[in-house]
Length: 200
Image 1 (cartoon, rainbow, N blue to C red):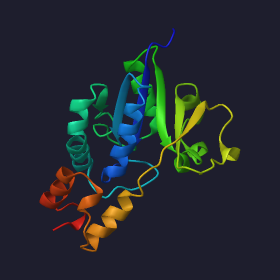
Image 2: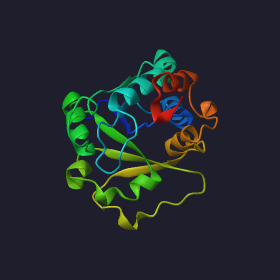
Image 3: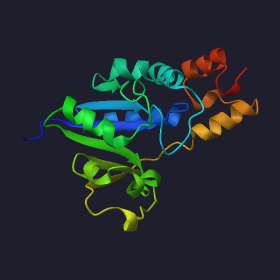
């Protein structure tokens, strides 16, 4: 079947979602290369631990993207991984979205650091046959392709990412340092009201 749409899949722990994520999402939406852009908060990532519950992380993503979703009709948030018990594997999500969008071209959005470790993913050959990868490089950054399986289809773009990380935000909160400027105001308010990451 001929692919009729190009659908972006952007997964992540979003622990918490921050302005860097929003910047990347808006840059890709403004590129007009995708007919649909699906943000997928991870349920229980198998390669890393999460500090906030799935329900909290999903709520923060919904708060952060509310205005974006009003502006960009192609933007969606998926509960697929959050609603599933057990470890979250990308290949399971890919199978699900493939079934939901038969014949469409699925593109997995991934940072170059994570892509460099792609050979560690579960069922990588199944993944290779189901999606293309769009690798996000920081300006001047070179991707080490030596460990990238030859079966993968990928392209690279440069985006001047904001120098923000979820880890940095969590550490600021734990140290009772200001963090509010690094994420949407509604997300900061939610973190405080719920006492997430020991925020008071």
